[in-house]
Length: 243
Image (cartoon, rainbow, N blue to C red; front, side):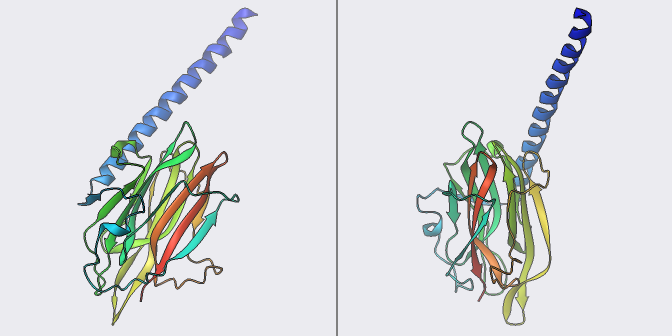
């Protein structure tokens, strides 16, 4: 009987060992990809400011983004207080997002936002990235997503418990149409995270009729996140409107 019970035990231990090894290898590959994506474009890191990034830059030209931000709450069913939250300076729009959940506390402790100035002709200025939670080696980020040139963030979905499992950043092309700058075409997306399973516990969808947003003129100007024992439970999006 002892021989019969030992074999399943050994096999179970080996399965757990290989499962942990596979998980570690996957995490390593995901983080290598994050580092690659992080360095794929030129950018400038902005020193963290206690009150957010708004004081970091003076708008280089006339503002075509409405400075009246509209907070939109995407909840996973629970209330609470945002653990990380960052906004962009006037005239700028979000073009990248990254985050880290501390596995020991299951709280969001790091947030990175990339933002670019939107010019009156529909072009975008240089990329700036600001850290909340102190600047850290990018290799420690669990998710990093960014928009290709000539596009801006339009929709965001996030999921994770103890780690950021999934982060989807949807983006649309922005251009001058006649005399008006607006978003055009269908959205595309970039996915990051340690699992990349497509499961988003909170998602901001500008198409939600309850928000009353103009889909071709709505951009993102701020992001906040919170996690609890059920996972990522709260996200706030500051939505701005193109003039």
